[in-house]
Every structure is written in structure tokens, then in C-alpha cells.
Image (tube, rainbow, N blue to C red; front, side, top):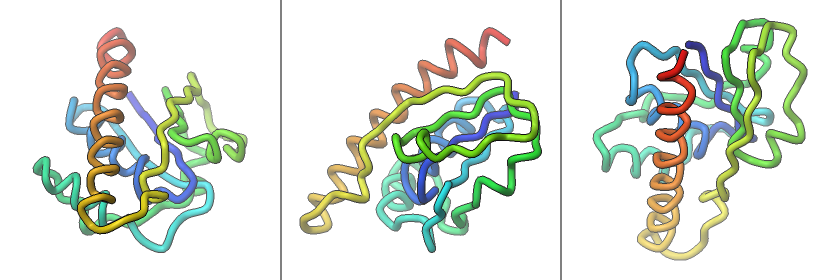
Length: 140
């Protein structure tokens, strides 16, 4: 199964979803990308994933245009901005889904306050993507 996860910057939500979904099943081919990529992966996303045993410190945001000509079972947008600006894929896409999450990069405050927001979004992404995995990936 081939799954592409999209958000605007590919710096937070899509990176977290990509990492978690791939951890549920190593046989899934999971990638993430952005419609207007950020310069780097958000350090709080790296930190919250590291707290759960995942190291994405070497990962960089990827432009969705890199994947437009590929075949995907699922293209999943995780933010409203990506949903609105999602390009037309010239490759085959079997299913398009939208599972929206608030942008933790909008959090303000000190380190611990911002990290608390990222942890909450991480938890929400983990729950919703595990439901997706059980309902969609296990049935095919």
C-alpha cells in the first residue's frame, strides 16, 4: 500500500503522521510532502517524535511536486491549507482523504508550553492514523 501525507510546509503534522503510520506497519510505503515547503522540519516535531523513540533529525521537507506522477492508494491531507491547494495528480490516486489537525507550529509561549501543544497534536495524530490504519490498511 502506497500512502502520501500532505500538509502545507511538511514540517510538523505530515512528518509526525508519516513517521507514526510507517511505524504501524513496515510494509507500508509512506511518504510526506508539502504544498509550500518549509526550510526545515520543525524542531518541536523532531523532539516530540524523539520522546517516543523516533529519530527524524535527518529528514527534510519535500515538495509535493516530487510525487505528482506516482501511483498512490491514498493521498491524505492533514491541514485545511493543503486540502485547498492540493495539486491535481497526474499519477493514479485511488482515494483522497482529509484528516485535519490544528497546526502546532502556531503555538506560543515558552519551550514547555509549546511542547505541550505538540504532544497533544502528536497524540491526536497517532489515534486518528491508527484508526485509519486498522480500517483501511488492514482490509486491503
